[in-house]
Image (cartoon, rainbow, N blue to C red; front, side, top):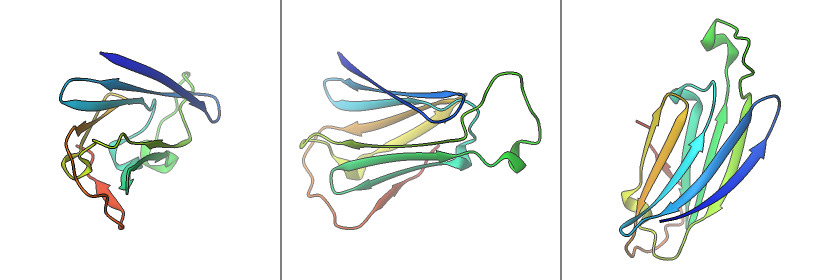
Length: 117
């Protein structure tokens, strides 16, 4: 299992992303502290995965001593054998997992929005 670490910082908290190359799929792990599922957007255009999150403070209604991420955006170039049509994303307790099976499909010219469960 191969895992690459990618880190991006915007503001007081840190978002971390990593890629895991399994036998049958690629898994992108993204840690987004202080975000809600509704604030996260996952899109694929051709063979590029874009993850973005913008914190809407009016939705949260509370403040914590721990700094929260305000916004984050990162794009990842997907491997040629990534089957972008079968992508699934799950967000739970600050961690986003994006599962992209290996296979062949033709890159589409329109943006494919992935629902985050």
